[in-house]
Structure formats: C-alpha cells, structure tokens
Image (tube, rainbow, N blue to C red; front, side, top):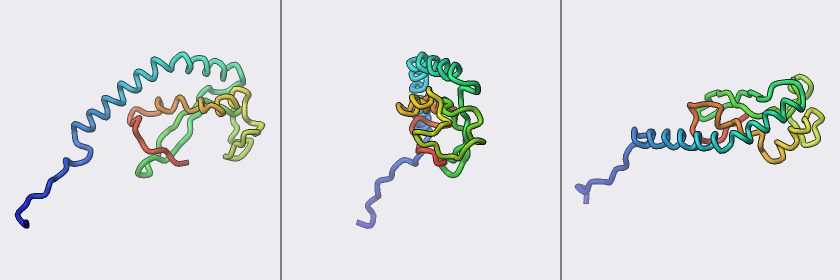
Length: 129
C-alpha cells in the first residue's frame, strides 16, 4: 500500500473559513447591539448617576500570542480606585459603587467587551491579566 495517497485536510484559516467567521462576527455583533442597546443605555445612565467619573473602564489585557489589547467594561469601582487600593476587589470592597455591586453580581459589567475591538472575534480564547 505504499502507493495509496493519504487524504489531506484543507489548510487552517483558509479564505472561506475566515470570511465565514467574519460574517458570523458582524451579524452576531449587530444583533447583539440592537437587542442589548436598551440595557446598555440603562446601565450607563445608572453608573453616571451613581458617582462622578467615567462610565466605561478601559484596561489592558494580553490575548492570544501575547498581543496586548484594550478591554472595556462598565465601571464598578469609584473613580481612581487603582490609586486607592490594590488590584483585587473582594465582594465587600469599599471602592465598589452601589451599582457596581449589582453589575458584578450578574456579570453585567462585562457587556461592553464585545465592542472592545473590531479585530477580535466573538469566538476567541479568554484574555489573561
């Protein structure tokens, strides 16, 4: 059987699969924004009424291949919380705002993450701190 050809698989990341993944990302993101925009608006308003400071927190993370990217979340701590305390925030942290406690409990502070970057995919590995 030395002359029997072996089956081959198409190369990973081919043009069609990239285009299909990109199309999925665009459609998924558009639907998510349309459906989620009322919640985003309510949360943004609530954060701005709770305390002074920005509504969105921007942090740097390391993604696949060690590439850094900007990550966005709803702000759950008081403004300049990084100067007041350490990087860990337990559930009873005094830097947490009233709205922030609610957002963290239900993971709603994570909602802006898909908007973070157009170069990232909805189907991606988790980022590291």
